[in-house]
Length: 268
Image (cartoon, rainbow, N blue to C red):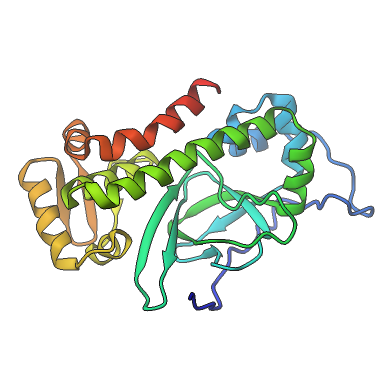
């Protein structure tokens, strides 16, 4: 049903050494410097780990640039890495046979993309970088070994999986029962939550594609949100002026999907 195509993938940073578990020739992990740990802690999951746990994990992490349009994995592909974004935003979506695209979830500095617990596991959706930035990647075989050791890292991954399931479920329900105004408000808020400013670089075409609607519908709906004073829209840029108003507009379409992530943060 899906077409498999060649995608661009993020290149590695030469500044950070990659260590693969099980490689007898690789040097043993060493303690990370405070500066390096600070960089990794820009990702909320990694920041939630205690210092000892993060120092144990850090040598297996590799800092990589995540460029807009990079496919971290595509439908049906094997997982080679899990990615912990720091300031990048990644969209998870399905592409149908006719080219129609629907976003099912979004991941930023609060989470991780590409967790695979079983050997030869295949992706059931595509993950594409929507907002450029950086992230730390971890080889899938290393992730499985570290998860098998249990402890704080394994617990965090399980809690995050629960939170992500809540987002997926809410997006399915919202797709059937929410108005386009609610869905667009939720979509903008999800990116605002993962952005470092109130300004979002996004085109009407991208919003229409991710929400599975016509561009003209986005034009009308964004115009309504602007008339109500929630956003300011100019070509390719949306500035959120009234977050509280936008949340009221989104209603349960947004709030229900946050429950799992709020619970996750309470345990951190």
